[in-house]
Image (cartoon, rainbow, N blue to C red; front, side, top):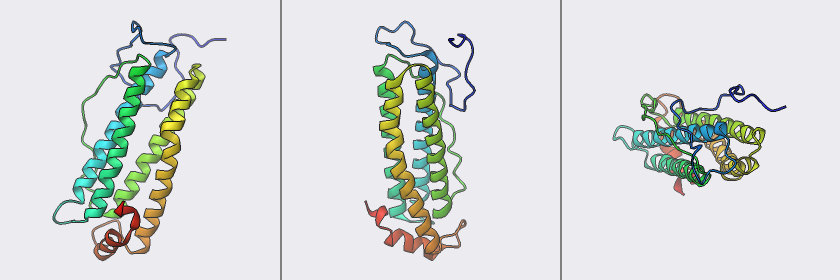
Length: 201
């Protein structure tokens, strides 16, 4: 039995409240309205994450923190996030969907001024995004759209596992060299910035 038209599944997907459906699009093919809206909301979530990572990179470029390799690492992560957001938007356009941009909010990481909380914030962000992407894939399968489910899994979920593993390793290394949650772990942060090979890429 099919789901009633007005009913929605319970979900924590970031949906676009002001979404304009592309029902009249000639390019639209087998793209359910719920999947289109979820793709739009997840795209916005990825852009927010990229903005947050750029803000974290700028924290480590300040003269009172001065950890250039850590800043470069966060810049690279922000670029990866932007590439993912652009890929999601490209896919949405390819399927004939609409993207509804929203106002950019403050990143909420102004108080972060040490390596350990910044890495923990990035790890939390990637885990939340992975959960949302899994839910997006399940929503697409539920609505009979295996193409979207496969696209999300291959382009977003698989690479995210490697990033999560790398972040876990970086957090372990940061704790071992004496980084703390406040700015008192200064020498540990300097050692981490100088010796961590993953920051040199």
